[in-house]
Image (tube, rainbow, N blue to C red; front, side, top):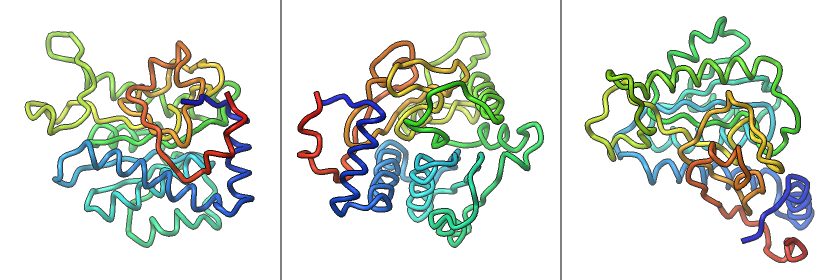
Length: 247
């Protein structure tokens, strides 16, 4: 399978959009693919799903996934970071479905975030995608650090040992309420450079990463590859001929 860089992926999306496959359609398909990946791995019983939503297309994918999961009966909460609320159709659709929407800018000390991470069955990381090139900023390191701390606490056993991330409750019916949630990264774990594999240590280690059209180089390069988990590549309709010139 082809591996693409972030620039190559952006060019593919641009060419697909120019050919009639709109960005909105690709986003809808991407979010639906994330929701399907979760539905295929969780019990039919409705669960608590937390969606961390960032400012770009990655966040839009997360909002689409939130909408589908809500429609399928799950209890979904959206937690926004640096997302513009104006003229955001996917956010509006989430609001129309009465999905609770919280914002990091109004969450002093990330107290709400900590509670949400502790109580959720699935955590969707839709904060940053392939666009990251430098260091994390604007409060994101602190946000990820707060969430990561809860995940580490949930993994800790009374003996002091750690257990692998639970993944899904139905796979481990003996899991307690403190068992860690299934962590699903949208395209990339936030903080992972999609070209180099460089990663911020505060990034959330995913059980599953759902990427779109083609895997990115950073998925397979260390150290970041250790944060990817199971890599799923979802078809969002980009014509294969557009990538014929890629290695």
